[in-house]
Length: 447
Image (cartoon, rainbow, N blue to C red; front, side):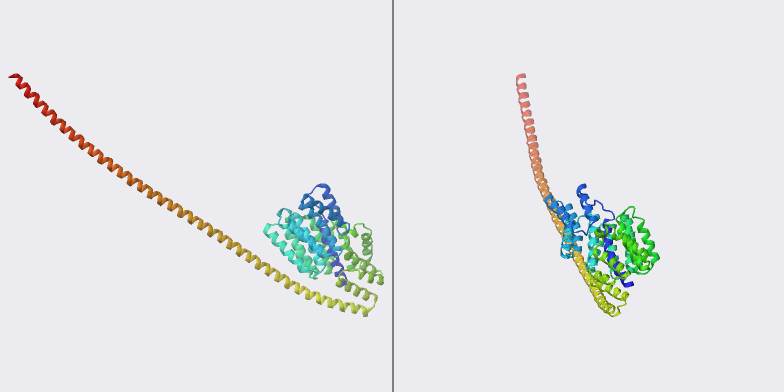
């Protein structure tokens, strides 16, 4: 029964991501009111195949208007349906295009992070935990570089879900608790009840029903603010009651779920089938339970369910056969997990090497730029020195010529002064001679 409860919870975890994104549908890409209302309606029924038409219409208008926001809305409605229908290549393609459109835009992080988180939830469900872990680490790097607590919150949620998938409840609770702490820093309190539900689910796995009950109550206190939590909290309640053996409350909660029109559009098929199997098995309807178990999408889910049904029915030989196959599957999963861890480690080491190479090239480019600047500075400095030297040479030449001209002028002035002195001397001689002649003439007249 414990194994069955774990498998039930593994299916319920998938719903957590969907309801998380719908807990508070906000116009994060700032589109017009009519467009947002259409998008919000699609988010409320995200696994409904009819969303493909809505997604296509939004994307087409986005292409016509060259509006990346509308295209992102369309793609974000498309990939949950692709997941539900098993079209994983198209799911990956839609996410890749979202990354191309807004992967580098810091102003769209409040939309980008939840979308990547939801995608990672789907990756975990289909056994691609290593891809989800790489996405989480990439989100952490972005959050650290841009100081975005919201990114840290979603990254820890993803890691917590991966640990939950690997049945490591201790690490799952640790990461979910860290995510709840980042919620407050990110002012994303609407995500807290979803994290409480995830923590409650882990405590159910650990059969700590008192803690599971406490976190369920805390999550339920938010329902008045976020009515879309009702389906998720009811599913968690159903799991808790079934684990405790409280069949009366389990049946009542199950009946309330299946009568809720939002149950089929908000819960994925595996989550619904898991509860159906638990209900049918508890009622003793083993043939119907086996048929429903065959509808589960994962091998581990089908084997675990069928083992529990056969054991409850007293069919021990087929129960042993299913258990043996389940153990083989678990061994292969364990090996795959180890390979995933090695793949993650290799990828992170490669990414680290790439980042180091990028840093080296960046430093080299900076050094080249610095050397270029220094060379240009040296050339400019040399040019200035050369011009100063040339200016000094020109000034010296001008001084030399000025000195020559001044010396010539002084020589000319000295010659002029000498000539003037000579003329003055000659004039005096002439005057003396004239005076002597006149004196002699006067003497003759006086005789």
